[in-house]
Image 1 (spheres, rainbow, N blue to C red):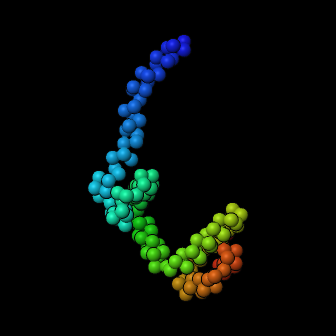
Image 2 (cartoon, one colour):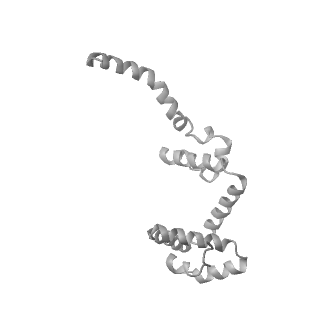
Image 3 (cartoon, rainbow, N blue to C red):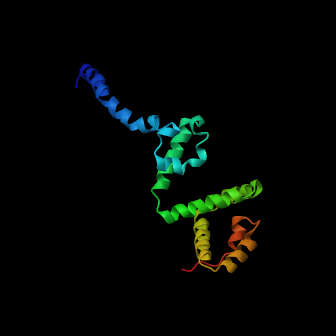
Length: 156
């Protein structure tokens, strides 16, 4: 195709493509106001209702994606997330920071070691509550590497 034809074709392409581009970004443009969200999105994002309209658009888009993923979960997983959020909210700021540090340290471990520790945590979840409590007591205040020693060995 000669360069002149390519140049003439470009505006034609853009003329045809802009409605498609608009449709791709429309949900993020039109679903920005709280009152325009679907009821299930409003329910999942209820804690953000008061300040929703003042949030930056990229934060709102991120929250909308999370709400849609949440709404697609089975009820038992939604309940687990709700319980986890309640546990997190009941923690003091110091406890939250300690847990954030624990997660940061855990992420710095080699992948093989992280996988081993995860498997040991899975095994520990199957134990009776009394044994899980003794593991929690043993692990309190320790690094991920030290806390792993409190866990039962993973079954192969």
